[in-house]
Amino acid sequence: LSIIADADEAMFRSKQHGRDATTRFDVEMKRRTERRIELERQLRHSLERGDLVVHYQPIVAGASWVLTGFEALTRWTTAGVSVPPDEFIAIAEESGLIVPLGEFVLDEACRQLARWRKEQPSVARCTVAVNVSARQLLSGDIVETVRDALCRHDLPGDALWLEITESVLIEDVVTTAAVLAAMQGLGVRVSIDEFGTGFSSLSQVKRLP
Image (cartoon, rainbow, N blue to C red):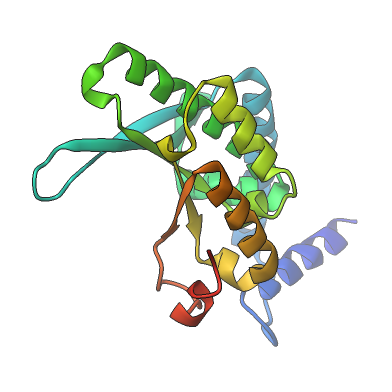
């Protein structure tokens, strides 16, 4: 069983590198696999306990330096050690935990923005940006999840920005276009994060609302 698991891990790594790739399983890969499994277990428990926190990075207008909004950033500390976002987000993606994690961040970001808007007149028109992964966007109920979060915290649709990665554009453009059209109907705005770092092209962007 151990040999089969090791071979399966090597195959998974090969698939990540594209067609016709080969991967040799070694001790370092085994160490990384064990760490990923343990972090996935801890992440699952942290989500159940509500241990993750959301920090907010201010967004300002370049010319005037006027505060226009915030970007929600998830941070996770387990057993007293901070886990880098790129590491635990990748684990969440692979395990499917990205869906409940995304729902938590979305709800928390809307809750916090609604509170700030009510308590501080200077941010009454500020927005909040939340990252949404391809897996979340194509999960089937993302539109309902967003609608519920906005209603629960009494926020208009244009208070929310959803940032999607360009990987969404190459996974399922038809479904993505339908979801984004529904978001547009809610008044929610969408931006493509880090466009140009992957394999997408401007021709694909033209197919989206």
